Length: 608
Ligand code: BGC
Image: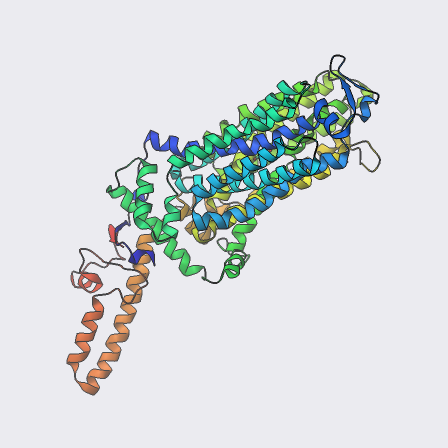
């Protein structure tokens, strides 16, 4: 048990469970958000590259006239990669990220969050090298994307974990939203780079967009060499001194500060509490434990997994990636638009510019509010797009004003996503798991995001395509996304608790005590340190009573003296409780009682 390694004091006072934070400490936490750049950029560049003349000629053997900007000897409608190749090259990334996200959690628990992210950066670079080296070899290109995906999976899971664990509670939502902001910036940058290189008549056309990614790996990888490991990881490993050092660094406080001691004590106490609740078993058993518990209990592991995976699934099913992945094709189909690429650029820009609103909204309005009202906003916007698209905006109606109106409502839909479901999905999965299953829970939820991401990437072209076997839904597809948003809204209403302003440890308690619908009003009443002290005191007292009973019996049998002696030693504690609880000045529980101070009645500080 970790507490036995380093006794320290812990707070019973709720206001002291988190140390005050300096500006430098905020910046340190915010830096990790750069991980979002990988995610956004890597999903953003592939579509543009797949449509580049040079890339197409490389893989199909067709010729292209760069001056006249048209293919030679082949109809422009047939000048492109086969659908199967496109689908494979696009979706293989999600396949890699899916597995990367699943294993990253385990690795992060084994070697630490920080090192796992650095390894993720290295794997990602290997994937990029393979893609750059792959000149017209589909297998190598696809393999490179799979490996790069693995790296992105590592990074996208562990960054959320790391940020949630080091961020101060009052701005945790805002800081994790910064990760989403970096995703949106990544998508925008990818669009810009691809736009700039698309007409090149050499390998630079696709190698430059791929090569730019080394920059993100360099920034994040080197930055993390300087950043500390998550203190919660150290606590998990029983390395309390390192935990104290990291915590002091990320809070910008001296290690000997009382605040640091108090916050650390609370993290340790929570971990111990969770370890008592979650049975410790084999490796397989620990995976099974993630799905353990009753569906009716808000804090059971299975409920938290449903919460994390459900959020990520419904985030994808809002249909946002339909716009980002297939926006260009969709706008082309609408007719009357001269530059579909430009419109795509505008939609990504709306995404970037709207996201910072969530930094403030997530802390003031809360996670639940954003998810419920964000979904309502998207339902309305998507139905409007679908209605216009099937009436005045029909291709046959040839009405540019109606098409412009559709684009405006699509942008408003992006606004609602970017300020609500985009960031909040990530914020909540970083917050909702208890420490013993946190890394796996975040990994499974992130894998779920990529799984649905992949499904949408594969299915969406068939929904709107007009080739044989496709549904040719056109703008009607927004009726489907709008209807799915109704489920997203219901999911948020019934299953997502409000976590704003609470520490990760308090969130545990809140999920145990109230249903999501009542969670907004929940207030912490005690700290884990006080709670564990209370439990230990109760246990010791029971043992004291048992011993007394036993010694009384023994006394009756063999005289009082021996029994008293034994009980007195036991009063000096420790060997009984799970925790080393040293109350009020080292006298032990027995001393406390004799001083008339019962630790579970009104403790200010509990030595733990
Ligand atoms: C989603 C991505 C999406 C992006 C758009 C993220 O939160 O998980 O799939 O492409 O937001 O900004």
